[in-house]
Length: 152
Length: 152
DNA sequence: GTAAGTGCAAATGGTTTGCATCGAA
DNA sequence: TTCGATGCAAACCATTTGCACTTAC
Image 1 (spheres, rainbow over the protein chains, first blue to last red):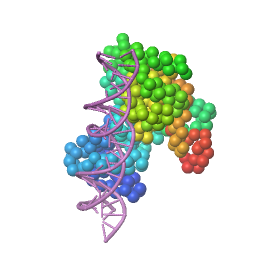
Image 2: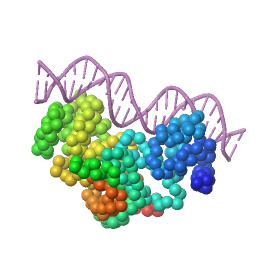
Image 3: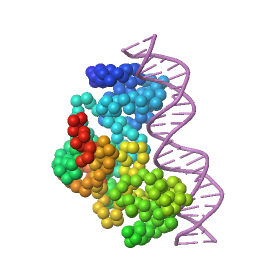
Image 4: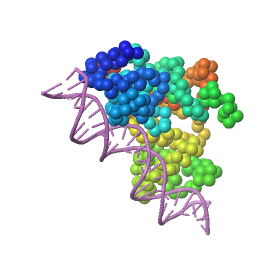
């Protein structure tokens, strides 16, 4: 984890960005919460626990840089705010998918890809060259599905 | 197309909503542009061509009702505004997918589904019951792909 | 030393809401 | 007639921006 931070610091400097204490703090929060999907405001809250003087604008500006460097993914689950997720340097560019529970709101991730066939079809039929995709699957999670059974 | 309007009118009244001239105009625009992905502002622009007195709030309020009745789909292509698409009453609940060109911004639709296998996996591995899904595929369309070939 | 980064507050822009008025049923 | 619908303007809220000050390099 310390090595991740220095890897990221190197990547920042390669692109002529400075590694400030604020950016380090934001990175720490992102790295410690890779499994979550934090909004800018939530990131600010966590960062402020250790560095109360940081401003929201800095969070947004840092996220923008990290996004442009491909270090965070940005997603939108339809609740009116963007959510960010740290992306390990060595991971493949294709994103994992998200299972969104319509009852409790929990968001799970799945690693299965299985879209290769669809991408081949898309190229064959439309001449469209796929570089990435984003799949949101709505439904009911293991806990909520039984309760909802009668209603579906 | 006239029959679609009356079908929708019936559906509105079933849910105790009135079919006002404004709502009719908004519906007309949505139905005439089923292939597009209009934002609220764009819908207002088209509606104003015939009924200049309509306000933006009415557009939003109408879209909200239509969405709650399942008559329009709502999507977000990451440009900071929601986009709406009229959904024929008889169409299946699973949405079609979108191809988003990273160069020219064109959005194409595809009807292929091909996600059944993935949905089975998701149920088997996670106990997650799928009710719907939304797939955005990013890349380069037939026109832009050749120009971009060297850069990818 | 200096250009880049920061914090604050103000601006922006899509969307929502309050309210007085209007009109479909 | 009556309650829901409308238009307008103001409010809202996530995000962006301007600016004077600070700081990493």
